[in-house]
Image (cartoon, rainbow, N blue to C red; front, side, top):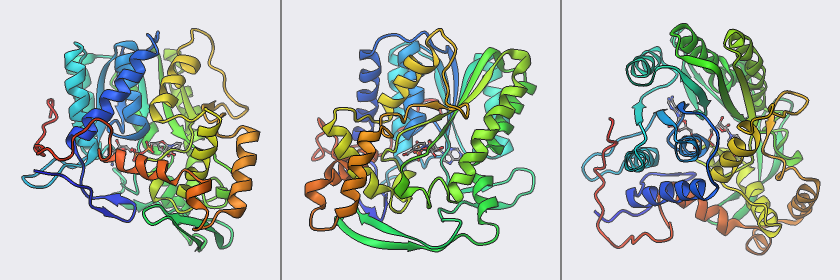
Length: 395
Ligand code: NAI
C-alpha cells in the first residue's frame, strides 16, 4: 500500500516501514562512524523501540557488539493498517543485527506487568545469562500496578498555582497562550507511580533474585531538567516529582547492587522530539527555539548523538563515572550552557505566530516529528508501494 502520514494532534496514526528502517540504518551508521566503545556485551533495554531506548540498543549493539534483548509495547501491523513506529524500528534493528552477526531478540508487552518480567527473565536465562547493562527508558502515560491492580495515570501539571505560558501547535505554527490548572489530589502520587522509579527497582530486584546480573553490572535510566520557562510545568511539576523519585531510586538500586559491585545511574538528557515529549504543552515551542540556537552554535544532537556520547565519553571510559552533585550523569550540558539558554530566553520573550518561522526551527521540529513515524526521511521513495505487514523476526 501507499502509506501517508495521518496526524491527530501530537500523534501520527500511521507509520512508514521503509522510513523507520532508514532511520535505524542511519543511527547504526552514525554509531559505527564514531568507532568502537569498550562497552557492555549483554544488554537488556526496557523501552527499546523508539527515542532514547532505541538509540541505547543501537549504541550497545553497533558500538560495542553487544547482544541485546529489547522490551517494548508496540502495535503490530494488520492488513491495511500500519504498525506503530517502534514495531518497524525493532524489525529493522533485528534485521541489521542479524546481518552483523549480533544476537537480538525482542519482547512486546507491558513492561510494568509481572508476566513480561517473568518472560524476559526466562529468555535471558535461556539465551544470554547474566547481563552487564540494563537500560530503563520507558515513557508511558499509564501503569497498571502489578501488585494492587490499580491503573495509575500520569499527568503533566504544575503543582503550585495555574501555569500560563506560550505554546505552539507545530502543525499550524500558531503560537498561543496556554493555562494549565494545578494538579489535584492524587495526581502527584499517580505520576510518580507511572514515571518514578518503582518499576525500575522491581526489574532490578527480579534480575538480582534470578542471578541474571553480571559482576560490575550497570543500570541507567533517563531524566530531564530543562530551562526556567518550563520549570513550573516540568521539573517543579508532577512529572518533576516522578523524576525526583527516579533519581532517588538510582541510589537504592546501587545499594542492591553492592555485592556485585554494580552501579545504577540516572543520565540527564537533552530535550528532543520524541513521541513522549511532543505530548507535553510548551515543550515543543521551547524545543523549536532551542534547536535553532543549538544548530546555529553547531552543538545540536539527536537521541543517537546523545546516547553514543553517553556511552563513549561518560560511562565506558575506563575511568570512574563523573556525576553532578546529585549523582546524575549529565549529557544535557550543551542544552543548559549559559549562552545557549540566554539566547533561547531572549527569543522566548518575542516569539509569536508571525515571527515563528524566522526565529525558531519549527521546520526542524516538524521534520523530526514526521521522521519519528518514518515519514519525510531522506532517501525513501514514498510513491512506492510498501508492505505494511513487516515482522519483527524474533516475535
Ligand atoms: P519514547 O516515547 O520515544 O519511548 C518510550 C519507550 O517506552 C518505547 O520503546 C515504548 O514502546 C516503551 N513503552 C512505553 N510504555 C511501555 C510499557 N507499558 N511496556 C513496555 N514498553 C513501554 O520516549 P523517550 O522520549 O525516549 O523517553 C524515554 C525516557 O527518556 C523517559 O524517561 C523520558 O522522560 C526520558 N527523557 C526524554 C527526553 C525528551 O526530550 N524526549 C529528555 C530527557 C529524558
